[in-house]
Amino acid sequence: MIPGRFDYHRPASVAQAVQLLAELGDEARPLAGGHSLLPMMKLRMATPEHLIDLGGIAELKSITDTGKSIVIGAMVTQNKIISSELLAEKLPILRETSLQIADPQIRYVGTLGGNVANGDPGNDMPALMMCLDASYHVAGPDGARSIKAREFYHGAYDTALNAGELVTAIEIPLPPAGQGHAYEKLKRKVGDYATAAAAVVLTMSGGKVATCAIALTNLADTPLLAEEAAALLIGKALTPALIAEAASAAEAITSPASDGRGPAAYRTKMAGVMVTRALNSAAKRATA
Amino acid sequence: MSTIEQVPITLTVNGKKIQRFVDPRMLLIHFIREEMTLTGAHIGCETSHCGACTLDIDGISVKSCTMLAVQANGASVTTIEGMAAADGTLHVLQEAFRMMHGLQCGFCTPGMIMRASVLLKEIPDPTEEQIRYGIAGNICRCTGYQNIVKAIQYAAAKLNGRAYQEAAE
Image 1 (tube, rainbow over the protein chains, first blue to last red):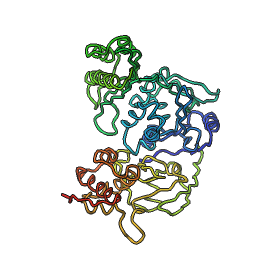
Image 2: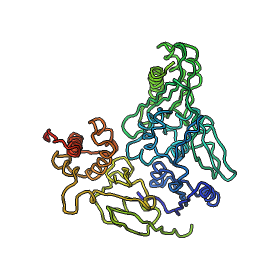
Image 3: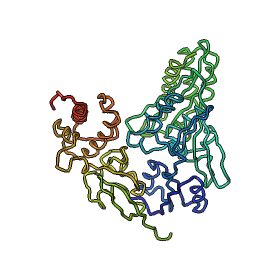
Image 4: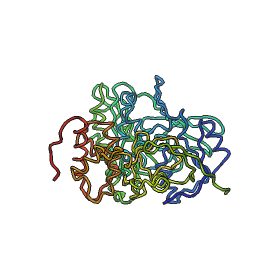
């Protein structure tokens, strides 16, 4: 399995990459870690005439604490996320999620930017970024802009990116003190996409839920923000009955495909199970 | 579409600096096997699942069927051929796989050893669970992994100055 022919470009800056994308047009694709794009090219399901390798752009590889948020360069790998002490301290849910993605070799090469920008509903980071209310920094021919993760995903592989635009960084607001978190993923085996997965962050106050966000992976054409499920919990004690109610509300917004991971009804049920587990773990980790 | 330009690459393979012109679409595993004639790394699934093509690239484990040779430009690459000493003394992991019967058909072994060597650099004295998690990207269809895990434990013990007690089953 050999990819089709293409011309190779290796810009040294975001400005150069954006310029190349503008000059080369529709036949050019940016290459991040390549662990989604190269398999597609080997199958000839993607046949770009130009590859723009972002691997030489140092400015895309840093993790920065701005005091209000953490900004992660698009070319930061899953392994860098796992080994970052800053993230372990400030946003431990990233590490927890990265550790459930693919396998060690793929985590060394696969990037956060590629994971969020590809628009593959099987990817884990998009739902997490929706849960955390992250924004994506984008550079393009008309300059830079920021797009909320919650507004980024329009359909499978269909995102808010315009032609010639590139995700350069992911900005995640620092979580409030005492926030509990969990990413629960059911998968058939190492390296598989989720049968169902759920991200939860919440804060507790006086034994009751003060804030909560829930998002779901691989249960529709896009990641899903389970707003109604989260809203049900606010101001209430997290009893088993209430958790079951939230799980049902989350199940109600799913529309998974029936595939090798199971029939749609099973995957929907598993969405509820993942939400239940994630709510329980997040609540245990929350301090108030 | 116009003619595709070959791209010059410079990389260090098993300590030796080399320069070549390559087609941009050439996969690193093909470059290593066909251009460098280092056929220790194997092509198993060719879809980044099996890990038989795993190489050490600048200290990380990479499935070289899913990396272009041009992406490795400037890197230092170690293959299974670069593991034993110049006088033929086996690398501790090679010795361990031999002593613990960590292979049957041997197809997965080069990838297993290249992966295990990076794992032991990151976690010098791993638990069994850490070993199993750490080699989760490498598939073996013969051994059931038991003796592969033991081989990595043997190598870790030896690197930490301990004797590994358990004999291979």
